[in-house]
Amino acid sequence: MEDTKESNVKTFCSKNILAILGFSSIIAVIALLAVGLTQNKALPENVKYGIVLDAGSSHTSLYIYKWPAEKENDTGVVHQVEECRVKGPGISKFVQKVNEIGIYLTDCMERAREVIPRSQHQETPVYLGATAGMRLLRMESEELADRVLDVVERSLSNYPFDFQGARIITGQEEGAYGWITINYLLGKFSQQFEIQGIGNYQQCHQSILELFNTSYCPYSQCAFNGIFLPPLQGDFGAFSAFYFVMKFLNLTSEKVSQEKVTEMMKKFCAQPWEEIKTSYAGVKEKYLSEYCFSGTYILSLLLQGYHFTADSWEHIHFIGKIQGSDAGWTLGYMLNLTNMIPAEQPLSTPLSHSTYVFLMVLFSLVLFTVAIIGLLIFHKPSYFWKDMV
Image (cartoon, rainbow, N blue to C red):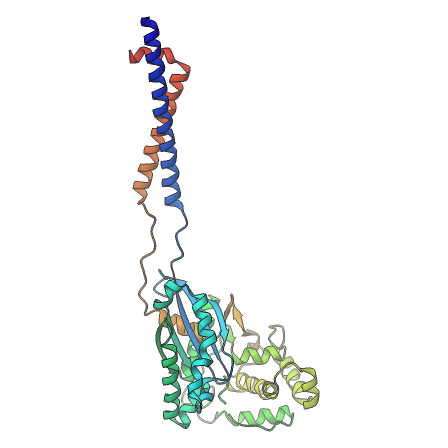
């Protein structure tokens, strides 16, 4: 009778101990998994967005940029994530119909709403930089230029972004921001004239040279108009109109020599207009009619204006995109402006390293202890119960 009672007690105790051990094992495993997954899960993408509108003379383009909120060396590591070309001409053409500017910008600004997460809208800066077209309009009438910019500002202020203003940037700024863009990613013509073309490259070339005043130079070496020209060393990036014109003429390959480019330009300019229109039926006549002059201007500027030679020509790279971003002034503008945006602290893991290690060791020891006790119960039950008694 006593033996039966003792046996029942042992059975009852065994079941309870096993239940406790099993429950402890499950808790330890769950704790280990939870700590491990929590500590090592991918951190959410902590990024910032910025919008730049390039309001040029012929059209407006909207660019959306993204960079890590922490930044590196307080400079946003900026990547272009979207480009939206606004349908219609440049904003300077709306001087007599400023009430249409809001509708004009709608499609691309709505596209920005879609691309940028809603939670980021209010902190996303928007900048508009107007270039050649608005510079010319301001020269004609500062009042009209201000009127256009005022309507642009009111229109862009209606969106949920952090609008920072619209301004006309100078030609020097446009060039400087473009220089920043090119150098960052690798580590327009002012509208001179209404020209009646006759297809004579040499005559066009001579007419263009008259624009470059090389008679006066207060420095050791000048480009033209008394502007200092440093030695032509290293590589040079030619972008924007330089690239688009030369791309159309199929002259962007680095294997094409300066002599070959000049020869091909002469042949293109000498082609009859009707033949040109037939050969390039998909290109708007407005642009098609300018390629001879534009190409000749580029060659004249590079060779006679900046004194490139057949040898140094090899160091000119006509660039459209670099690593998926458009080569131009807008990214340089954004890089410069993001220097004024305070860097945020990097996102950190939920637990400190020491806490993480402590919890992992603790729950591992619990799991190990449970496993040892379980083995003793199963393999040496008499020894186990003897110690208990």
